[in-house]
Structure formats: structure tokens, C-alpha cells
Image 1 (cartoon, rainbow, N blue to C red):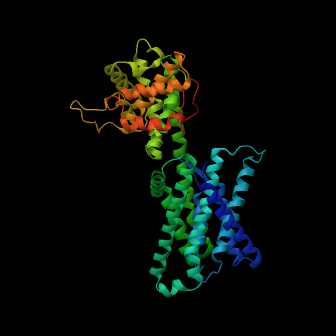
Image 2 (cartoon, rainbow, N blue to C red):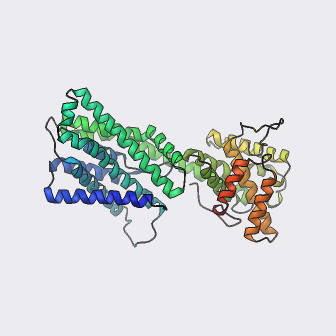
Image 3 (cartoon, rainbow, N blue to C red):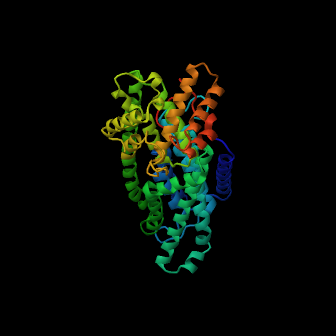
Length: 443
């Protein structure tokens, strides 16, 4: 991770957790049985975390329980008095206990080493969950313990509306924190990252918020029995999301296998598909594509050369960018037909079908119907083909890159989109360079 944002977020989370622990040690726990019940449910939620598409680490049950404790007012009609700092302490201890239990159960306690990206993502998610619960508690607990809520909303519906409003604000706070951390890790634009996070609220995010809000309200009527009873739907949702993630992983493996088919058959150079995909994703991030758009772009880029399998003789070096436009379009259409039968999302094979289409209409106007992904892959593919040719000619790395960029610029506005070429010039040092570069599976 780069930037100061993660340091600030982690520091804030650690500082709040420390303050909560000191408060608990100095003053003891109010309603200890209630605190223990919520801490136990939060720990359980940490043990059953799930990784969603986009490498989002979610703990649906733990997050809902943390939000419910932050918004907990009366319990079976009796007032509670735990306050903001105790909320932070209980949520933090529950998360810590759950994380330790999960790691011990999976045998992950071992020698220290570099922090892997997956662990960094989990740390981000944990810090967010603690800060979001603290934010909700700051909005709710002082007003509840002082009696201000009862004075402002003397009727039942008013209290419920206030709880809903705080829950929604907490969800927005979590989305903003996630966008800040995502930008720090990947360099994506904040607006794009925030849009992705807000979209995720329409899925399991909204279910988590609704469950946390309902738990806090229903606990006031039925007591702690509401905790396991109303968290059960989240466990079912977790199972459904895990099945969806497994299906997505299978799709990714299928796409990787298809991408290697042209290399095994000798139609493209080793690693070409992965290098093009990596370059395309770098350009997509630079141009502000969201997480879903980047995933579809990567799939299309990995399979962009499938149509070459229809050729009687391989193109020298697999450089389809050097073929006549009509032949490039024929290869793209054939590849699209093959890809469509693999069951990938519709946008993927549609993007591949348009890969070789010119960027301008016969009257000279830009073709706005050409998908941005197709325009990006056009540039990424030609860039790798030209770099490979430059290496074969014995040109140094820097000279090869400059030559490739200049040759692409000669077709600026005709074969290649000017906006994408400008993005390539900006990220030129971050894209894979040639044979042997790149690797791995779908991001």
C-alpha cells in the first residue's frame, strides 16, 4: 500500500481501540452480559468472513452485530448505558478474538514475512469496521444516554427513523473509507472507487446495514435472542456469495486456459495474452474504469487472440496489429463467436468482436458505438506487438518503447483512440515490457 491514507486510518482505529480499552479497564463494563454476547457474535462473524468479487473482505455477521451494538438503546424495555467507548472496546475485542481464532483454526500462525495483498485487504476491512461502528456510536450513544432522543422523538416511529438515519450514515462512512483505502492501494481515482463501493451497498452491504439496524430495534423487544435469530439470513447470504465466488473463479480459470491455447499452438508469443491484459488494465485504471468494467476488460484482453486459431499459418510473432484491417476484423469476429460459447458475460465477446473496428466512421466522425474496452485492447495489443518486434530487432528497452509509442501515434485518431494513447504515454513505465513479463491469473 502506498500513501498516508492507510497510516491515518490504521492510526485512528488503533487510537480509538486503545481509548476504549483504557475506559473499560478504568470504569469496568456496563451490562457485561450484553457486551459479552455482542463480542461473541462479532468474533463468530470474523471467523466466517467471505471474500466477494473485487477482493472485498466482508464479515456480514460481525459487521451487523457491531452496528447493532453501536445503535443499541433499550434492551427488553430496559435502558442500557454502555456508551461510545465501550462500543469501540467490545467491537475491537470481538474482532481481535475472531481473527485469532480464524488464523489458529487454519494454521496460519507462522514466521513473519512480507504482508501479502490479501492480508492487507483484510486489515483494511477490519479498520473500516471498527471506525464505522465508532462513527455510528458517536452519532447515537451520546444522544441516547443523555435522553435527548426521547425528548426529540417521543413516539416509537421517530426513534426508528433516527436509528435508520444513523445506520445509513454509517454505511456511507464505510463506503468513503473503503474508497480512500482502495485509492491508496491501487492508485484508482477516488470518485471511481467511491462509485464502486456505493454500488456494492445494493448487494450484501444493504443486507448488513438492514440487519444491524433491525437487531438494535428488535433486541429492545425480545432481548439477546434477537442476535442469533436475525443473523441467520446473513449466514445464508454468505453461503450464496461463496458459491458465486467459486463460480467466478472457475470462469477465470477457463479464460486463462483459453488464453494459453494460442500460445501452445504457436500462434502468439509466450505471455502475450497476459501482457496485453495487464497493459489494458493499467490503461483502464488510468481512464477511470470501475472494478466490474476492469474485470470484463481483463477477460476480453486475455482472449483477444482466440480467433487466430482459425488461421492456416500463424502470423509471424503473432503480431495481428500488423495485418490488413480486413483480416484483423475477420479474426476478431471468429474469436468472438468462440468466446460467446464459453458462457462468459455478454460484454466480453461483444468487446472482442469490435477489437479491429476503426475508430472513425466513413464520414470521419468518431465511432461512439465502439466500446471503450475495445479501444483500450487495440492499443494494448498493438503496443505489445511492436515491443516484441523491437526486441527481435535488438533495440534497447527504452528505444523500443519510444519507437512503439511513436508508431502508434502515427495512427492517432484513425486506428487508435487519442485518449487511450495519451493514457499509454502516462503509464508507459507501469506496463509490462515484453516476453516473460507479466503473469498470474485474473485480478
